[in-house]
Length: 149
Length: 155
Image (cartoon, rainbow over all chains, first blue to last red):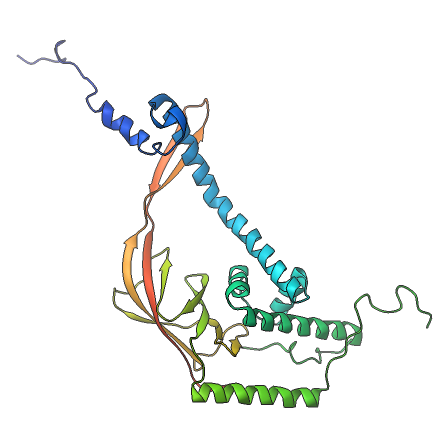
């Protein structure tokens, strides 16, 4: 005869509860207080920790960019230039280093940073002269655009 | 003209040096740098390379890890072509925006192609019974920069 439903003495029991709980607790072991031991408190803290780390991965890029800008500003002020003047003149001279690179150069290669600051200062002065002069193309040497074809 | 607040520009008066003198000075500097490169008087060179949509400051015997796949086998030698800046102790060559391929040569070898540690992406909204967890492992490549060479072909 064919039995269409399972008999009553067959039970479906959860046998790996321990390991399911350990999967969560392993991420909470370095927390402070009872939330590193008790599952009910740990599951809440672990969820918040994961969500915070997901969001922080996006914020990290913004934070690092502001850090680089602060460092470049400090280094360029040591050479007598403000950050907007430095960055805009560097871009106008077709030097396409990004802020991470310029900040690293300012820390580890001070002579190179000094030459970049001098380049930006010279381009700035040529820009002033061009603004007063009203010529067709700027007369200065560092303002000439390099054409790559 | 009477001196008012708008009769002269707000920036201090600028005087550039004479173009003839300046050209002479520039030629001297270029000649000195050419001599230094030709006689090999530079020590360790560093370069700023644009690679994998990022800029890296690189020297010889350096390790670099990219967060993506490179279509080259382990042990392949690679030449990085987009060099933005090369520097030594006494001189720097700044590219506008790139330096020529006949001027600099940056060689690297692919060492390792692995996968990153499992990062957990979780979205959770409270009191709505909504949580999604995703484990992401992005492929990574490790390169070692072998050499940076400059050739005396300046101007």
